[in-house]
Length: 132
Image: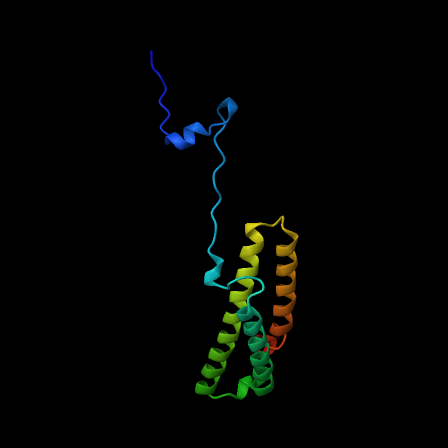
């Protein structure tokens, strides 16, 4: 006679469900503080305000003039554009991951929607670059 051996660790065997169903697995979690300290973090608001000011200044300096820029100036403009987009990407990554971690929390949904709206407004000052 052969006796089946449960190779799962003892802690997992003890939490087995009736009928042989596997125990619930712990979901992965992210350390979002590496991106932003939290939804109400002053740094997040400051980053978005700075990105908006930079995007408006970028638009004023370059809209309608991209094709005429010499190589070095074009490279500098693209680097400036990428820096603005990086700030916006960090904010949106934080909002999306926070929402993904608990989509049932209405505060997370509101926060993500608010962030999406704010980033869209800021990005509207940058769209000319891809169009030109």
